[in-house]
Amino acid sequence: MPELPEVETIKRSLEPLILGQRIVASELLLAKALKLAGPDQLSAATSQAVISELLRRGKHLIIRLDTGYDLIFHLRMTGKLLFEPQEAELPKHTTAVFYFASQTKLVFADTRKFGTLHLVTSGDWERVSSLKGIGPEPLGADFTFDYFYAGLQRRTKIKPLLLDQTFIAGLGNIYADESLFRAGIHPERPAASLSKAEAERLYRAVRETIADGVEHRGTTVSDYLDGLGKKGTFQNLLAVYRRTGEVCPRCGRTIERIVVGGRSSHLCPGCQVKSDCD
DNA sequence: CGCAGTGTTTTTGC
DNA sequence: AGCAAAAACACTGC
Image 1 (cartoon, rainbow, N blue to C red):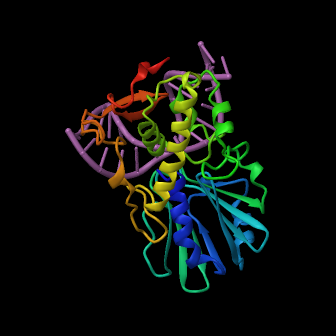
Image 2 (image 1 turned 45 degrees about the vertical axis):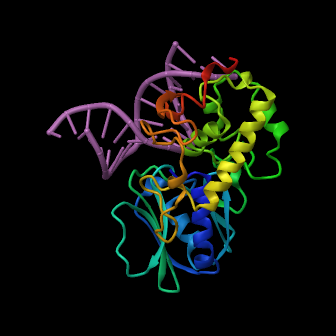
């Protein structure tokens, strides 16, 4: 479940360890995970390459090489990027490995095998379908309230809209549910039915929830670990996500789970009333 | 043992 | 346009 805060934490944990490292060899164990290139191209692009920059866009982590290529990782649900000593045993479901000159390695592992690695020439991100048309970063300057409010004027429920990566980059199920709770808005509310005051509350809630998630190094509810195998701590601060049957920290009522747009959604029936004005 | 649930994105059909 | 369902998988918990 690496969403924006988790991917940002992985980036920050890896940065001091792999920036400037020289890749001396690479191994591709799950060929179908590599997109827009073949195994030979990956070898050619990474061989003797020095890592010059780490970037993040939405839920994507990008490793920039001095050979003129970008490695674009998407971890989907269970993907991990781990920095380890060269002699460490590879995890069971390893997708790819990059060996460094310093007797260390970067392991891309993924139990569910959904994670992807796109190889593109530097900056050529448009070729990656999940990056083409991606929306603004929720903590970026171009994610303004005016942009947010204008985007709400559509015939869709608010929760699926928050998860739409072309609207906002990086929100997933955890931070969408927590943002809606903080704003006191029911996930099934038609987006266009939100008043300007409610929209303002939600806009702030999205930015604050994402910022809090980053500050607490992400949420570990099952799989997520940072680049050093360390858990996040934001799970301790979740109000509703995966807390079905527990007590609402705000009003004391029982947290419920419903399905919205095919995704489980957790909410407090006291704090998030559906019939506010839809 | 079987099976529902887990979450991200893409694709397909209505 | 927007929604629903399915598919890509493996593992956990009942």
